[in-house]
Length: 109
Image: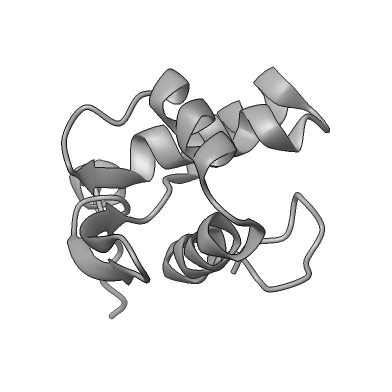
C-alpha cells in the first residue's frame, strides 16, 4: 500500500534552510542559502525584467553572513564590484536553488 505525504510533510520547510560557505574571490568567505520558490516568484512579480532590482532582492535574502545584507547594501555592492563577482555568485545560488542554467524565468527543477 502506498503511503502518502501528510500536509505537515508538504509544508515542512525544505528550501533556504541550509547555508553553505562561498569564497568570494578577493573579498573573503560569505555564507549563502538557496532561494525559496516563494522568493523566486516574488522577485519576478515585483521586479519583472529589472535585473538590477531582482539581484538586490535575491542576494539580500540569500547572503546570510555577513548579517545585515539588505537590498540597499547589495546596490552598493553592485557599484563596487566587477561583473564576474556577483554573476558567479548568482549562478551558484541558482544552482543551489534548482534553477536550470539558461532556463527561462519559470523553469525550475
